[in-house]
Structure formats: C-alpha cells, structure tokens
Length: 324
Image (cartoon, rainbow, N blue to C red; front, side, top):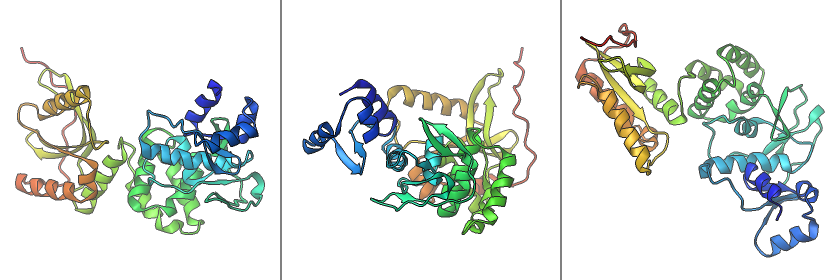
C-alpha cells in the first residue's frame, strides 16, 4: 500500500476516497479485494475506511473527524458545513456523535444517502481550505450549528472558538444577528452572553455553567498565582476570592485519567504550588463529577462555610517582591 495513501488516511480519520486511491494506483479491483478480505470497509459509495485512524487523538475526536470526512469524501464538490466544519476547524465541545453533512456551491441540491446529509444552502457562504477541501468559515458554521446543540455544548463551542482565536468577541454580535433570521436560532441567542474565551477545555466551560446555574459564578478564570518570591506557581481554572488574600481554587481535569507518571507528577506539583502557604483551598474534579452536579454542590457548601460573597473587589494578580 502506498505510504502516501496511508498518511492521507490518517489525516482523514482513516478514510480515503476512490479518487484518492486511483491517484496512487490503488484501483477498483484492488479496493474490492481489500474489502472482501476485511482489511478495508466500504463506508458509502466511493469512500473506504482503511483502519488507519490517527493514534494521537481520543476516540471521540476520531469519531467526529470521521463524520466530517465521510461527508466531504462522498462527493468531490462537497463543502463542509455545520458541526462537521467546526470539527475541521478544531472547535471543541461538540457532541460525541455528529451527523455527516455537507453542501454544494450555488445551492445545488443533492439527495442524502447512507446517513450523509447534503444541505441546500442558497445564501452565499465564505469558505476556507482545510486539508485541500472547502470548509465554511467558523462564524457561519457556528450559526448553522448552535441551534442544534444543548446550551452547555453551544457555550463550550463558543468558548473554544474564542480561546483559539478562531473568532473574536466582536464577531459574536454578527453571530447574534445571523441567528435572529435562522430557524430555531432564537433559542441560542441567550447563550452567547455566557461565552468566555478564557476557558481552556469543554469540562471547564461546563463547570463554569454549573456554578453559574447554582448562583456561585467564579470570581475569576485562569488566574495566575505567585509565591512569596514572585515566582509563578500555577494558573487556576476557576477561582473565588475568600478575602484576606485567600482563594478557593477549582481545577477541572480535561481527561478522566492521567495515567502517565510524568503527568501525575506535574499535576501534583501544580496543585501543591496553588495551595501556597496554606491560605488557598484547592479542589479538583473530573469531567464526570462536573456533569453529575457534584462539583457545584461541593463548591457551594465550601463557599458558605468560608463566608464568600460575590462582587468583592479582587486583588490584582501581581508578583510580590521577595523579602530581604
């Protein structure tokens, strides 16, 4: 098998098109043999799963990429739209499973098949090239997708797009305007004000929303902390000021397990640094605890015990000069 084809398959979540195979000499008869022997699997007409999925991605990310590339490879003229476009842009926070969807320039109609939705968008759409294929711009893809998501998914996607610089805060007003004229768009408009580009992962976004719903929205996000010598010791995902220089710090792991010894050591050092001289309280949660409401309940209980009040003036996160 040509190495170039396998490398291409890995970039496309294990998928290749018949045209891509023909270009490197893997013709129809060889593809039939590969499928018959169980080495490859036919996904839809003209699209094959080689089994060469990228090994450095979480299986959920591979599933989303597979949907996006299934829609694109099913037709050489297809343009990625909606959630599939967001996946290709690298936006996080989408559901684990998304529908393969694409459109065609000029609003040309195509019949959907094999679970692939071919949308008919008649309005003009700006596109960019990703992996050699046309993909609608992030802002347009968000307008197409947000009404189909839950609030938490929508805010996580907005946070991710803002954090990565794929959109700016001034773009949100344009997204709001476009949602007003889109079917189902009004339900997503109130979610725009909840977006915050400081969030570094969907679990952090979900944690912030859980606290917001419980009336204990964090005082600060991604706050830097320094020791007595002015050395940086860590950055807190969510932080509440308890007064007198004391903080409640909540850390949200973006993955359920950190198995590598190096990662465990790094996490422990980071947490120990944030504890400081005993003046800070650090709590750590996994994504499953966030989704189940465990985080908000524990945080609220601790804040009540510590006499926390919202709206306090926050001290600046400046380095303190070393004592002599």
